Amino acid sequence: MPANRFNAFTNYGIGIGLRIPHYDHILRETPTVDWFEIISENYMVDAGRPLAILDQILEQYRVVQHGVSMYFGSTDPLNREHLKRLKTLVRRTGTPWLSDHLCWGSVDGRYTHDLLPLPYTWEAVSNTADKIRQVQDYLEIPIAVENVSSYAEFNDSEMTEWEFLNEVVERADCGILLDVNNIYVSSVNHEFDPHTYLASVPSDRVAQIHIAGHSKYEKYTLDTHDHPVIDPVWDLYAHAIQRCGPTATLLEWDDKIPSFAEVHAEALKAQRFLDAHCILQETGAVA
Image (cartoon, rainbow, N blue to C red):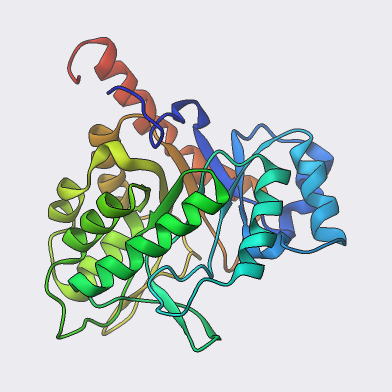
């Protein structure tokens, strides 16, 4: 597959989320990690320990930024102060792309601090794509939007989630952060075939992939990021790599966080799928 501005990061391999319980271990032991993903909002400050830690990490590792509060689907105007701080951090980290979620979460300047699903309408497509274009133009780096897990659907939706995703990224001319765990969680909650979703994603726009664990409850499945990745999600990941080629992959583990070694070992399970794809490429089994 020819590289482009969204899938050109084939040498990024496997990353881990930079989390506070692991700071001391990472700085003391300097483990071999391809890259760390940071939550942008945790470092959009003028000074203090977060930036001091980040600067030490940047001395030895590549860092990719991931946001949780851009809310591309909200109808509020973009927060210009937020964007200024974000651009300052982008310049500090040298992140090659920036990701955030395909969702909404703010009304009249009030923030829910949640990733709320959008109605899949043409009006929402237009509004969301316009916001992404504005942010991408301002930050001057590629944007990748992440599909979110969802637990409710809108009666007014005019298309499927994957059709909505495709329309938004095409109009915004942006990339995709493909979260295969979120696809699985939503497929269970809304009773659709996750492989149908995956097969519809434009592979040439996938800049990054997320894998994670989740929790199963009696009436719904919740994206909790507090368990190892289960086999059906690994299966989706394998198919994603077959479609997209070697893609920067990030393991999310954000609650009940175990030791760094355990998180690292879980992340490295993805390597077998990347290696398998490379072998198939070498033998001519895949294009």
